[in-house]
Length: 149
Image (cartoon, rainbow, N blue to C red; front, side, top):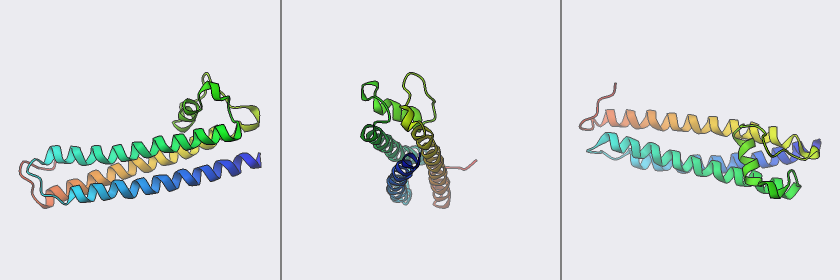
């Protein structure tokens, strides 16, 4: 059991590091786009939010791939059942269906889910903050055609 916790903790730390890097990239993109004085604020806001979401989604996909690789390395599930699929099921807390872990690694799923929930919450917070800051900026520069409701 301790090995499962150790592996789960190490992979979670790697995922957190990936997410921290993606957050920095997403915020840099949002800041650089947000500093502009757009003539069309609504499409500008949509673009900033879409770029931020794409960066965060790419991070989540990379994190799932890291978990899937870990499953393969430790033999947590049969590779022929699809380790990436199994990692997505765990990471998104969808729950077990057609693929389950081997008995010796049954805690790896809940550890993956705990990591996924944390990082999805983090992403939601980043998206909300980017939206808030972009709206504040558009209001401050009084972009034509923009009124905050």
